[in-house]
Each structure stands twice: as structure tokens, then as C-alpha cells.
Length: 158
Image 1 (cartoon, one colour):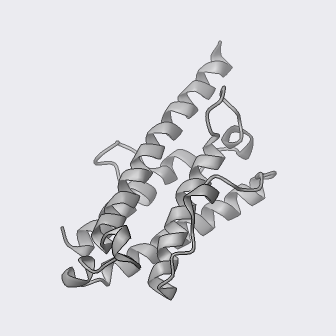
Image 2 (cartoon, rainbow, N blue to C red):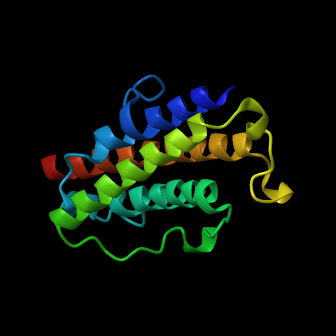
Image 3 (cartoon, rainbow, N blue to C red):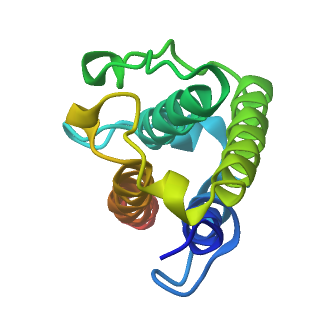
């Protein structure tokens, strides 16, 4: 797989795709009220937390392209202040879309040989492996978001 294909796959899961899941993250949350995004379903993460979690990794990997440093840590990947208004929710989404678009551009700019370069440190594998992992991780959480939305919607009907 080349860098353009990887960049397109990241765009598909987050911004505009329908091929794998017949939806994407943007479709699922763009018109969602922040109160629904924050609704707790049993012990599951909220939609707001899941989307911030995905963004955490998008932003962290984008930062590697900019600075060469991996500053994110898994242990902090669910630690976010609450989203308390629709304005704040939309602002977060706009940042998420912007960071995703910028990361897509960075990925597109990689040569095939650069995809094979170590990602910060050999222990993390290469760029291709990390970008693939980000895409798979986003699809995993997209599935959770879809299911949580269905659970919330069904609770309003009954």
C-alpha cells in the first residue's frame, strides 16, 4: 500500500468514506447534540470521549510529522475535560476535522521508502504500521460510536 492509499483510508474512516462501514465518524457525530454525545450508557465510554480519544491519536501522530517527537501516551488517551456546550462540541469537531485533513496531507507526502522508516523509534515499528494501526483503531471506535448511538436512540423510544 502506498502513502496516497493510506491517506485516503484515513479520510474514509474519519471524514467521508462509506466503503467499509457504510458510514464514517464525521457522519455519525457532525449533527449530534452535545448532550447525546455526553450521554452515559451503562459503563461504556461516551461518544464524546471516544471521539476525543480518536482525535488524541490523530493529533499525536500529526505532531510526529511536524516535530519528530511522539508526545502522546496511552495512559492519557481517555483523559479529557467534559464538553459542556454545543459550541464547545462543534469547536472540538472542527479541530478534529482540521487535524485529520492535515495528517492526511502529511501521509500523502510520504514516499514509499519513507513509509518503511522507523516511526520515531524502531520499537514502534514503521510509519506504515502506525498509520494502519490508526486507521484500524478509528474503525474499532467508529463501531462503538454507532452502537452507542443506537442504544441511546432505542432508549428514547421505549
